[in-house]
Length: 516
Image (cartoon, rainbow, N blue to C red; front, side):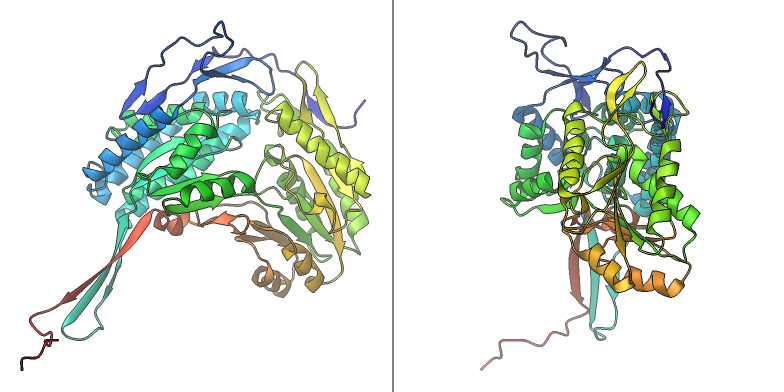
C-alpha cells in the first residue's frame, strides 16, 4: 500500500462529447463531414481522450493552410478598415468588460471541459477561468488609459509626440497546460491595444478557446477581430508564424518549439514574443520560515502536476538544514491529494498524455543512473477506478549541478534537491543554466533577499513566497526562457508600434538651399 494521499474515481457523470468549430470572420465554420471515424481511419477530426477518465470528451476539426489563410485575411480586413482599431479606448474597454462578465457567468462549464481535456483538478480549473476575468478587466483599464509621450522642451518652434499604435494582426499560439489562462494573458491585451487576432489553441485542449469565441461574439466584438483556427502546429501554427499578412506572433510553449516559431517568423521579420521553458529554483536559507518555505516548495512542484513553466522543479537548500528540510518536504508530499480531477478534494490530477508520462519517467530513470537517490515516488501512480495516467510525487536527492535532472525541464511532479553553503554559491547555481524564467529566495534577512534578487538572472524573483501573480505585474523570462513580456502595462506595450511625430511650429525653418 502506497503511503500517499490518493483520491479514487468519484463516479461523476461525464457530459456529452463537445464538438468544436473554427471561428473565421465572425462565423463558426461548418466542417465538411460529421465527426467520427471514416472508412480510411482519417476523418479530419481530433478526438481528445480525457487523460484522467480515458473517454472521448471533445472532437475538433483539423485545420488546414487554407483555413489559416482565411482567418488571417479576415483579421487583416478587420484591422485595415478600422472596425476595431479605430474605436475609442472607452468603446474597446466596454467590450472587454462585457467579456469578463460572460467568463464569470460561464465559469462552471468552461472549467469542466478544461478539467476533462487537461486532467487538472476541477477546483484549479474554476480558479483559473474565473481569475482570468480579472485579466480582461485590467486590460480594459489599459485600453482607456493608453497614451504616448510629448516633448515640449525641444525649443520654442518644435513639438514632438511619441504615439503608440496597434501593431496590426497578431497570431496567438497557446499551449495545453493552461489553455484559458495563458490565452487571457495575451488576447485581451492585444485587443486593448486595438489589434486583431488569429488564435490557435493546442489540439489537446481547444475547447475553452472555442467557448471564448462564442462569448466574444455575444459581447459584441466585431466580426473578424478574433478568429480561431484549430488543429496541429503543422500546418496551422507554421502558417500563422510565417504569413506575411501577420505583423506579430506570440507563443507560449517549449523552448524547442519557440525556436521554430522564431525561425518561421524571421522570413518576414515580424515581431515575436515567446514565453518558454524554465528550470526554476527556490533557494532556502537556514534563517527562513522553514515551514512556510516547505509548503511553498510542495505547492511549486506539484501545482498542475508540475506541468507548468513556473514549476519550482529544483530547490537549493543550505547544507546545514538540507537533511531536515528534505525530510519535511517528503512528509508534506505524502499528504498532497493526487487523484480524480472531478473530486473537489483533489489537489493534483492527471498527466496530460501517456507519451508525456513516459518522458517524465525517462527523466527520473536517467537521474537514477546518474547517481541521484529517489527519496519519494519515481513511478506512475495507479488511481482506483481511473488507471495509471498519473505520476507519483517524486523527490530526488543527491543531485549535483552537472546532472541533467538539475538543468533540464521535466514538466512533471519531480523535485531535484541540491545544496549550497554561501549566497555566492547559490547564485552561481541559480544562474548556471539556459533558463531564466523565475527564481525564489527564502530568508528573514532583507539584505540576503535583495542581494539574491539583484543577482538572480530571472524575469521574476519571489521572496518568501512562490508563484504569486497579479494582472498589474508583468511576466516573462530571460535567456532561453523567452522574449518579451505579458500582462502588466508592459504586456500591452508588446502589442504596440511606436511612431514619432515631429512638428515645427510656424515658418521658422532656415532654408537649406541658399540663393546665390
